[in-house]
Length: 230
Image (cartoon, rainbow, N blue to C red; front, side, top):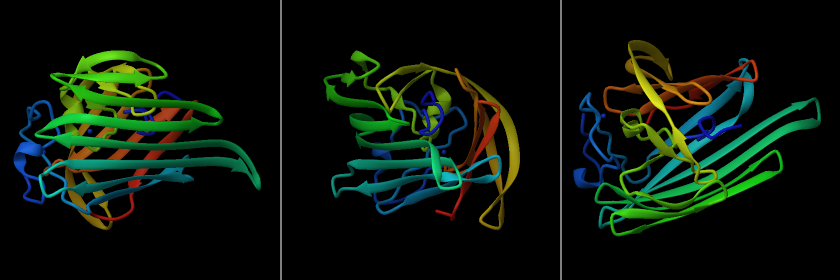
């Protein structure tokens, strides 16, 4: 699977919180004016469904240091099988570190059904030095990881894979407004299509919080269902 799936891939009114507005992790504020600032201890927890049945989980946990440095820790686990026989597994762990609104570090490791990948990226001046199994080189420090929680990814044409450092070309199309049922509550959302090797549909609320993701791969529908409000 390409990473525009689980982080699959790779994500806002301004909210107050432990992170200052200057640390909003976006190269530019989205055209809609939406900017969400994660607070220390925030958790985004999705149940992942395949054809409507349990497939795994996708969790993003946030830590904010006293100086405003933001860390986003992503953990994705997907499993498919036939009875007790496991036919597919996917595990991703990634950490993003943001300072003053810029990505300064990225570490990621993936094991996709036995195929492993990794990436490290470190800020050096106004670039990131990327060392990944799919790309090795410099990228602008304004690049957005393909981790989907940051709505700024809907305002760019290139994402950085948290699996292997791949530079992912995307074309983003706003799809208007849609009302979702989120943890039993009707929520107005902004819907976007990320067109790449695999088309991914994303929903964010009017505070810029990531609420849903859907795509089709190998003829099967994959849906992210938010397990709890945050």
